[in-house]
Length: 453
Image (cartoon, rainbow, N blue to C red; front, side, top):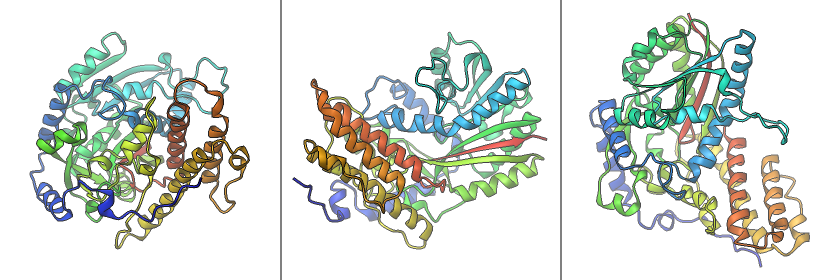
């Protein structure tokens, strides 16, 4: 039996428990006018997060800092985005008989070390045993810097048995600080929006210190918060200003209703704006940009899709994707449907989100149909429409093949444990294929190859 296609969901239907738009808008406006003392407010929030155990990894996959989207989407997409740049650097260092030195900017509890040392080679043999791009013998030294003493203490405890690793307290709003005088680093790394804590003048100072320290070619990995995420269209037309942000997503919905989480200002970046900034900042510091890779991350699964804190009309797609990757839990696949509301004076963004919505929804509906027709093998062998873009055709063929072959799995719940996780990976790949590096996701990754002064 075929699934009846719903009409475009009304915004009231998609957010039954959301605050009135006017109230949300006014609350956001008030927060945006708060003090620009970036680091003290943020540091307080992170200290509290550590104290509450939010940075521990055993809290389950449906919510929290290390939910399923973080582990199976964001961490993996970050590694994929870094893979070619790190692989090229490793080969260059091998030729000079030297090893790689890493400075992690805003290291938190040490997540950067784990990301960098677990990047896997692409296109290799399934039989290969050694698949890490940055192997232990090629990592000469890793230093993590963070303003939060609690974060640094947790990182030191976590990596106390790992040699060649050091964590220190430092304030990046003052540039590299003491690290500026260290031996030159090869990789200046950041992750999950850590550099969005800096305003423009602080970022310019940091870039100048990076150029001064590198004294040659290096990688500068700027992980930022994207301005054009559908989580906060209220910020789309605002630039060069620090705007409100909260980590309310760390708390359950019932706690958020009772307690006002801490808020602090962040710098939201578009890709075009950051590119212009980097051209100016690197040139002023006497460096040269030799290459760049810019990618969006978490286009529909950003943290605040579920909280709706900055967009009362957002749909809880992150929660739905978390459910896809949860064993023995079936997901209402209709909750994955995305309904984009076009923004005035944003034709490029409207074109992107319209295209991505139609591709995403086509794959979700194909999955619903495949489950509905799971016993009809001929139906599941039908090719997708030829008019679809190739990534969409591949996605639909893949989910149909998964459903067609799943009947051999005779124990447990094959839908929850096989079909739904595969749908999650298929949708992740679709994001990676469609992203354009606009700043249209929660995260904006900008990887620069810079030659220092």
